[in-house]
Length: 205
Image (cartoon, rainbow, N blue to C red):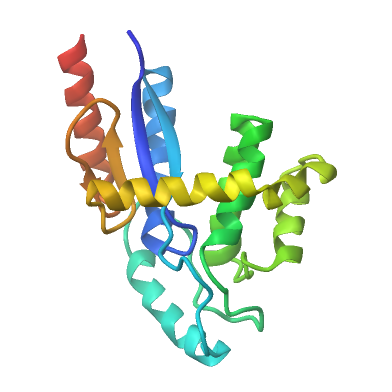
């Protein structure tokens, strides 16, 4: 039986996407080869924010306490460094796409490090040097980082974002099953995702 392919539209600056990532990773471990996950870009901040101060950003991150209080989620810390504020959503997506050109495993290492660096370690994942450091921490070839500047990757990020908009997706994380209508929006409880996947597997068995 072919695995169920979950297509996930997500943004690296979204705290709920961090929780969704942690839950979906756990389910991938549970279901093994019966499911596969494809991550696609969604840009909550498609362009650099104008005139946002670090203090304003720090105040905003107090809202992370809500997703931090949910079970089966990521690790959060209200912003306590002098890094940032982050500019916009595009830079981390480009680096993740560059990692995916190397391998699925390389993408997964960068994907999770980006989220942890931002929400748990308070690192500005829109800063080029921070992104280079995360790339090195993922033990990826130094010279391959330059591919994050490839215009084709930028177009891919924009195409994935526009695809979601055209579908009517207006919130993330958003998970849909390939070949099926509809989707699940928001960082849903682990058990909801589990039942949804299991029902589909039962239908196919």
